[in-house]
Image 1: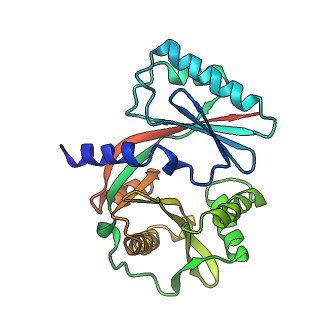
Image 2: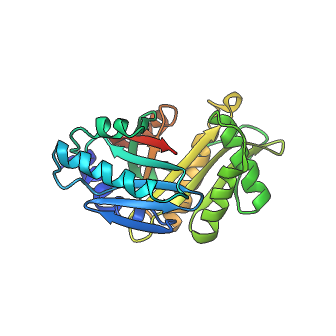
Length: 262
């Protein structure tokens, strides 16, 4: 078995059940689907696989999932998380028929945590730290909204604060210069697995290319190792994918979120 095959197998076996949704407030099973409700009116669809469903069965599953979330008036948006290596005939067409819109694909990257836990020099005046206080969390989320091109609002910060309250294992890390957050990201150790996830990586454009994101990633990897996690996974943009590849990470598949809004 190649490294990529071994890592993809570990991903499918360890990260596609309860491990994916630790902060869910409810999970409903529909055949192979897991229909998840999060705080804040967010729905989420995931699965280990589709049990070999043909195109007609895939349409039935999509129809059933949409009906489930439409019946809950508190749900305002739903994400259906697809993976490029799944057998899912007709899934994009079935989702589009219900108004789901595909977001940008991302690379599923997996590698050894130890490979990332290296010393990376920071530019003068830049420091790293883990944040836990509400004011820091709100400042971090506002920066990420700006970097991702979204209007700065309380919704992202509120969601992270709620997650922090029910998932104390999650870590929030920032890099700062002159008291201003310039890079941020999360570490999410996955209980009962070999994995920790690195998520939400973002750097202000004027600070990119200086090794700050790599240093923040190394700090998170060291923390993951201290928690006994040997593998790191990330859904990576084309900005972060090459950085991880330089440390021996493998692109094991792709993931494309499909978004529906009421």
